[in-house]
Length: 264
Image 1 (cartoon, one colour):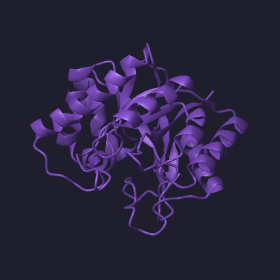
Image 2 (tube, one colour; image 1 turned 30 degrees about the horizontal axis):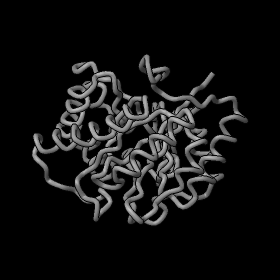
Image 3 (tube, one colour; image 1 turned 90 degrees about the vertical axis):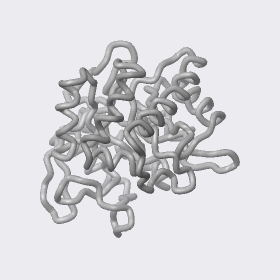
Image 4 (tube, one colour; image 1 turned 45 degrees about the vertical axis):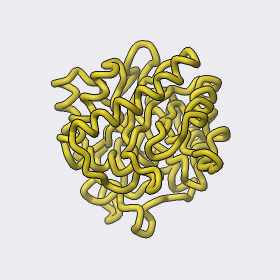
């Protein structure tokens, strides 16, 4: 039986500004990556989003990014390794405090935006993030891009004893090289629910995705991400769930909140 985790980036509202449809999406997913105040989110939003995740039995993950709230963490920042490590530890620690207040825990860490893409291309950046995770809590997992571009994470996993969960994006277009197509390109973000569900099912059951040039890219994903800021997020998640259930795919967290990886 095929099992897949369904995650979403959440808690990205800030002050008087609301982004995403967290209350509608949360009951439909199995893992939530919660912004930690650097690219989005604030203390009240973090507290509220963790409470919402716990209420719905959803795994909680930290979603740290560059200190770039004006650019939503989608601009590159040239941080030193020490600066980056400290920024990651700071953000994880903040979310852990709220999790502890709700008598729950943070199970995984997923870098956000430009930081995520930098870690895909630069093994040194990925290693710095991984070290920060291990230094804070070696039981937490690192969510990384599935496919050839994420292969350096396997080596980090072996050398550091780090749990790695590989991720794919059914609502994003892929280049032939296995990376996410830049958002500025037409069609980079996919909002058609039936198309996204078809891509998600292929990723879960065949371990593949069709790139922008029509070629098939091999993936080995344990979790699929739907972006919470996609205007169609609710419809996308509902349609994906229906497709999975109709084809015998079980939705469950990739990491057990108390025991570690559950599949993959």
